[in-house]
Length: 378
DNA sequence: TCGAGATGTCATGAT
DNA sequence: TAATCATGACATCTC
Image (cartoon, rainbow, N blue to C red; front, side, top):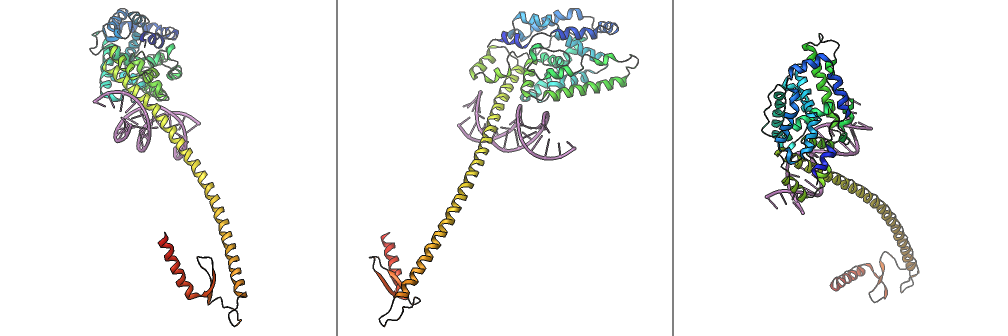
């Protein structure tokens, strides 16, 4: 487990897309000037942000050099600026937080939803406060909670080279983002109604993005993990042994939120595999049962044929026996040479093999005695 | 627009 | 006792 390696793989700083897109939109002078007025401390914010990050528990996860890379690329600052711009455009803090909350806010940190929700709102308030010059460090740690918030913002305007596995990349490219509402035909037309319309538009766009992002839930967890600056992939979190997992939790100074997310990711991942296995087993069981049904139907048909043939044989034997019986009686004669009536006499086979012609009523009592003997022998 | 199938997630009981 | 597994139920997405 090499946090540094994962960090460098998964948390590459923004690439040229950020540097080409973002300045293009910020280069319009009036807006830039306006932003300068609103954010007079922007030039010093980078170092302040870096000190904030260094002051947080992130230092337990990332080497100092990587933190410098993060802050040097200024993506966090850009995100804060984006959020501030939204505020500047007339969106209320709550609306802004709602917009940026959408992408990964579904079931999120399900087992700790209260905690995460609370933390998130604080995070966004921090960001707002930051933009307006209040730079007090959040007491709960920027690395975890603010990171979550900022990652959500990232989805709207920053692409990461290392995010290839995240399905949001495609939607990111479709997403107009970058303050498209700042390119309205004229500032005069930018009325409160426009603010409302743009708010609805942005909100719907982000909601659409959110819906798309639910396509692969593992990627959502990837995003969440990245949002909390967790330097492990979902696969690694899920597949590592219990000992490794617990060691990882113990050795890295993780926040409660990070630990909660890690446990959630691991639980969901394990359960997902279990569900897949379960469904596979169920399908196999159904297939096996269908095969059994097929085999039993074949066997049933075969037994039916066999039963039919046996019945035919029995009938043939009965007919032969009957004709033989009548043939015998037709040849029999009593003492006076008269034919024996088959209605009054029967052919009786005794147990010693002797054959007699006896009256029917004697045959019945004889048969009863034979039955008793057989029962005694049994 | 509806329905079926696929998939992820949660709850719960068993191991 | 905690972790994991198995599975029914539900939600959501896709076709």
